[in-house]
Image (tube, rainbow, N blue to C red; front, side):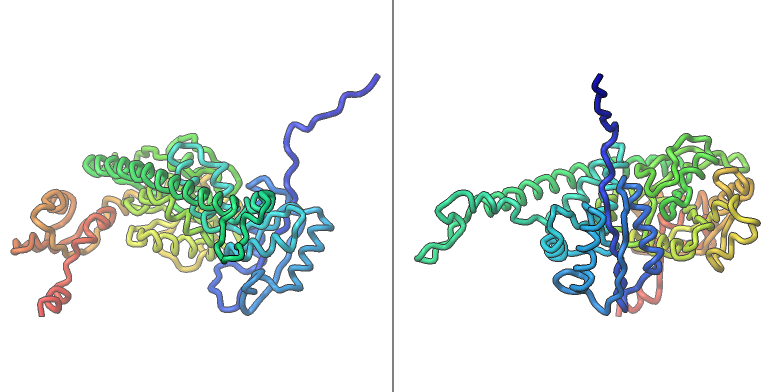
Length: 447
């Protein structure tokens, strides 16, 4: 009796080589070895089988292949040895680098960079319509400059030298070049469509936020490096069932839950996409609608995995991204997470250095949550900041808000609006930032 062949239920993982390059003079957050370890986790999250890695330190990138010619040959040998199908660079490659490297490696080996890998992970993890739109836009904007004449074989097959110049010097374009132009036009049209759709999403979010502000319910955004434990923390404090896993970018789509705070108050807690060093600019741009949830929040909970060897660098990376999306003015409480893995919670502060307004917790076990929520309440309702604003008369809502929630020390009705000096809760600062009054600037401007 002949045995039936066993058919694998899952596709075999693609064999992958990792390449890390350190360019002298470049500002880096993580050492080369740690950055490569992070790239390994990204590749694993994407479902790839990492079979080897290569490192190189250079004074400057090779303009043709990014890495030196000797290192190119070394990788080519390792590709043959390990039968690798993909080579992923920890650095962002320009289109020329990718083309030249793929020419050298041949054998249908694909060359990707960190950005392409992150985009692939985002594509796998985007479960909502908005998330899918954002990822698709980022992918197209990344691919557009990397379009090549992939169709030029058609010109060669057409006969008669369709792509060559005739004796009179008149160049006839072959089908390959025409197809390339068609592809570009199609992608541009798709990009325009996606941007229009996301603008509608952004407008909808804006209206939703406006309604929330009118309700006076404060919004708290959880931010942090990917896999710091934001989703687990939201589940712990709200009883939510947000998907949480020990992998990078486990959740992309923002989730909001209501949480009761001490003193009979409440707030809306929003879990947001995790940050990472070298976060692709295409993703930051595409996720603008989602990231506005952060920039419009009343308070940020910055979740840090204190057990990670690069906790301090990861925290700095998050703060840099907050500055990039113009959210660095919002009050922050830093949550030192995963203390259940430490010998003592007292060691948590050592991981990130001297940062104020910190609370050590375990999002997994709930330890420290009884200290976190009172601090959140204090920051939202008891912590006041001094500010002087000049509010235009048409912004009567803000004037009323200052009177209702703040402490007015001085008020003056001027030709340009209402000047108010006083103190307001830190959570409201963002709403008044555009109207801050600086007499010295006004006077110098009048001169």
